[in-house]
Every structure is written in structure tokens, then in C-alpha cells.
Image (cartoon, rainbow, N blue to C red):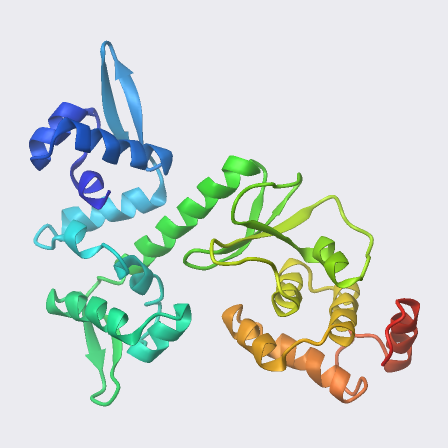
Length: 304
């Protein structure tokens, strides 16, 4: 994929690309087809021929600029496998352990990727003990490229099933979105208020439906649901719903805090847990007084 993006000029045919890259036309046809499906290039008819044209996606622009400015770097060879994932998380200096923890990767896998990037001069280390990796020179644009590419692919997946959908949060290969219509597609899991029904909590639903896209997820857990609803709506009403969920369902606190770290919601989740532990002794105007919450819990037949 990256090889084609690196050399395709406006108006190249499959035959011309095959000549440039030294591959068969059938191979290039498949590679271009994959890029077309991802919205990174498109085919333009010119008489009896079809020409391959780079799309105006931001990720394509960033990548082609990098290739032009750093022509001595073999980006197509480097940006394979886990490399894009590592670059995605290199928004700040990180250790191998920190990279591995972000996606539950094996340390040796991350180490191999970082070594390859370091050997080519793209990254270096800060510190001598458990060094932090960071970009050299202006190669930090590779992080921007990895982010833009992931976002572009997320948009493609969402628009295929919900053209008017909105992405609320995203990670390397997951995202949380709202849509005006129901989504029934692989890897899309309903979350938000509608998901509370699975835990015997029925709330008045809005016109929007919420979904998390993840190929690794089987179903949205209570801990994940609690975090998702924080990202969807952090108003006082939704805070009460989350408190009802935490009171009604036996949620593993360790799992909840792990999920909070993943979504950068540690402070918000900690406040909810302290509210329940201290019976409302939390300074937050968006939370009910304890007596009011007890009455609400009683309405839903939840014992506190």
C-alpha cells in the first residue's frame, strides 16, 4: 500500500505503476483496489484506460510530503506490520513498556519495531536506563501521518454504515461513534443508554444511537459502558445513570480503573467511585445530593 502511495502520480495507469515498481499488473491491480476501498486513491476513466489518482485525504498528503522531503528513507519498507501502531502512540517520549501496555503488545515485538526505526535514524532514546523513545529531527510528522491514516480508515468504516455518523473518541483500531440510525454491522457494538437495558436498567432513549467499533470486543462490559457514557454525555442526568449502573452491577474496580486509563477518564471515574464510597461526600454540582440519589435508586429498585 505505502509503496503505491509513495510513487503514484496523478494519471498513472496500472501498467505504468507496474513498470515503475517492477511488479505484475495483476499484483498492482489488487494493491490499487485495496487503496480504492480505503479511499486513499481513486480510478479516473480516460477513454479506454483507467488512471489512478491520489485522493485528497490528509493522510495521503502527509505521506507523500514525507517521501518527497526524505527521499533517502525507505518508508514503504519501514511502515509495515506494527510500525504504524507504534508511530500512532509516539505522541510523546515513551518506553518500550509504555508502548506495549497501550495495546497489550509483547515487549519484544515493540522492541523490534523501535530498533528498526532507530537504526534508520527516525527515532532515538532519552536516558540510559529504560530509555524513552522519541522522534529525531522532524520525523514527528510520522506520528501525524499514523493518526491521520487511522482516523481516515475509521471514517471510511463509519460512513459505510452510517453516512451522518460522528466519531466521539478513537484509538489506533477502535472508535466510539454516534449515529442517527441503527447500525447492524460486524465489529460495531451498541453502547450508551440503549446498552443499559442489558443490565436491567431502562432509560428514555434519544434519537441518536451510540456504538463502539472494535474487532476484538465481544460485548460492551459495564466498566466500558460507564466510560463510554462519560464520553457521550457528561451531564448530571447521565452521571446519575452511571452511578445507578455501578450500584446495580458488581463492576470490578480494577477493570474499571483500567478502562478509565484507556479513555483518559481517571479523574472522572475516581470521583464517581468516591461518591459511592463516601455516600455523596464529593464536591461536584453535577452529582445529586446523597438523599436524592437514594430516592432515585429506590425508583429503580436498587438497594444502597
